Image (cartoon, rainbow over all chains, first blue to last red; front, side, top):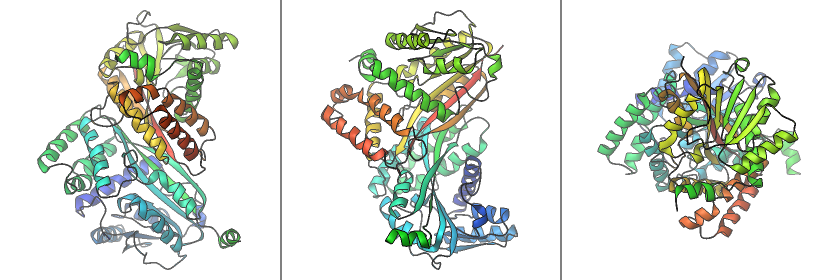
Length: 289
Length: 285
């Protein structure tokens, strides 16, 4: 099993892109932990795909009483996150190497709250049921799970539009696709059902549209450029899957950059934030009867 | 088959069922948008509104009901929609709204500067990509200086129903075949994300847009099943066109898909969404 994202580069540029992503998504979602979760009942938190640690560090800073753990497959990300936490003098956060697709390095029923942002970068649709089972193991009875996926939407740039169909084809090729037609890029829309099937209670989701365009939206445009155009994830994946040649990709990236720099660039995406609760011991017992 | 024939005969059949479909859609979209007009519009300064592509008049009637100081003129190319809208207005004793049959892709029969605000929602199925700039120029012409132009359009997103996603795919292929897509490379209509650009390029000022999720989950919105039902009824309008294009084997196959969607998207853990983008700008002067 791979120890890297399906779109992988493991570079500093990647970490920087993920930091932009964190800022942008936080802007659109408004809070680090959605308001529906009772903060006063949450002490131990796991971000099971923490990347460079932006969310985990922000959470630890905002709630000094919490014990926050960040976990990532990429040892370089874990090092950077640990370094950032030390620099910021945040002591209630630690970072470990771990893969959501494997056994998690934590004891059972340890965490009150577990979240994963964009787990589909590591997990194919077939892998999710097993991943959810392992996540539920490390959550205490009555604890909460928050799985968030990002789906890119339509863009006003014709060059950017070239990327989506290529990506769909590539995902089908590596047997990572959610739907063969490429309508859904991630498992996001399937997660409520998978969580219900895994025996969770209180399953639901919230949609957060993400604005990538507009003349005054530097965060959105920068995210598009760092995540797509400079392509530390998506473009390398497309090249590796032999969906496009390097020279064609370079031409495409130049066009994308021109389009995204236009005053009238508009683009959207959607965050699907799925929430669920692990049944309490009592509920689990009743369910068995 | 001409584009006109596609639009009139196949793309959207205009009849009583269609009026009902559009009214349900109007209510659901208004909910998703968080109101009839974007919050940035100072409603007190708005007295005369033109609603372009008013359909059976749901938006115009709701607006005049909510704001007694506003009068709305609704125009639509469909005579049936106009007849329906006029009948409903009379039935409800609403006098501050009038409806007129008019083609928004041709010069409008209104004097310059006639309206404080012009509203056009879900027009993309009726406007050829190359015609957008001239349509918008004409809307700006009938707007008074300082008046507001509000454009709203739709783009489908993914759902947890594979059958629904298949129907989306077929609809997009039909849109492409009818040469109504503004995105040359992707299976999207591409209008919603271009409204912002259209307004900027029409030299409007204070141009901005907002993005809204249209939620398909019945757990989040009790009206979702009804909205999805009517969306499927709309999709069924294009069956003959899809058959003609060879995209489906038979109309029965499509009906089977629709049945499957009804089953899959009414589950309590069903998930799916679409985008609505609302773009606004003001006329200079």
